[in-house]
Image (cartoon, rainbow, N blue to C red; front, side, top):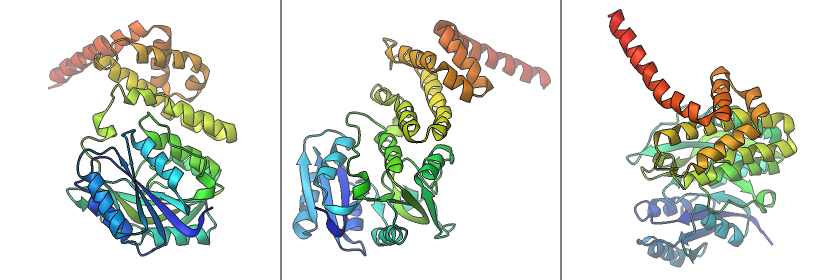
Length: 342
């Protein structure tokens, strides 16, 4: 049974002693007080666990789950299983939120009888927000589920993107997303969670105000680039396409260009770094998927992508030579042409 108007705030923690107190202070200090704050210590080996316990001892709204390390998805899911509130929010432990975020987001959600409300976010660099956010208008734009999915697929990434992939800069009605879980063992977990949440909602709102402040660590997933672990999430855009197709077949096509770009970018990166995919397992997987979805991909690809897709599907070895030797010769020719023009 959910508590009336209580917001469950789920904070997964793993070795974040440096920023954890700033994060927790921003949550316990919210202008909205009816909070169910669930901190999930995901097997931290630094002082993070002790810091979590200290906050629980001083604030009855705070509870701590100590568990073996299982990754971000595992920690968030543990928090979801323990959540009691009628509403949900996710905050990462190296980030922080504006003191009136919950109060304002809940007000917007209630006034529009919405299932999900999203706000703007801003990156924090060297302890300071990277933007003054003076261009925030405060506008509240209401979307249907289909409109939100289309925005997610087509709107360019920015700190004000209405439906960016992050699960954090949002407030959810628990009843709407109660059965959705993050995929354990995979990276880019928000890419699996957020689209499904958008599909589950009926009414969504984007408020043009900045309430969420995030840090991009040098050790973050995106900063590390392609790794053996990240390749396990290689089919995220296929998952997104299929889930959207189930409800909005005509809109799902908008996911295909992103799916194509991901496959080609990853494949080309693997050609440059044999250490990541020594067995060729992932390159073969990509080729098989391109062949399997050939008609769909070619219907959405631009001219350059179409040429690459056809060659890769027909002759991966020739494609590899083209991308290595061919690109090298192209650079040499361009360099010689440049010298001759001088």
